[in-house]
Length: 61
Image (cartoon, rainbow, N blue to C red; front, side, top):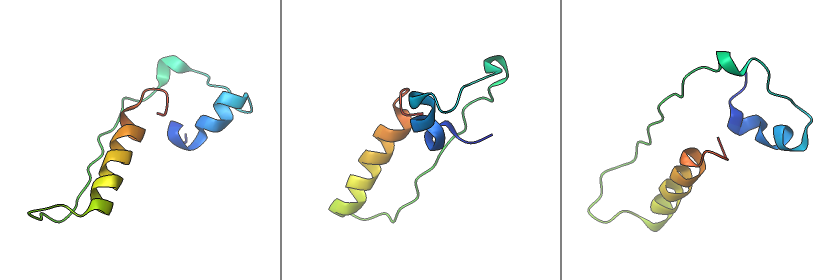
């Protein structure tokens, strides 16, 4: 069973179909670990923002 985020494109195009929806596992937590800095670096903040959008968007998951 692959994470939905990895196969979303194939589900959208119809190359893959979801079956046994009633047996879908519960969502799993994800943690981002980064250094504590008084002022977070811009590239770190961009990554955090993008990860949050990607993994909290029901369409993307």
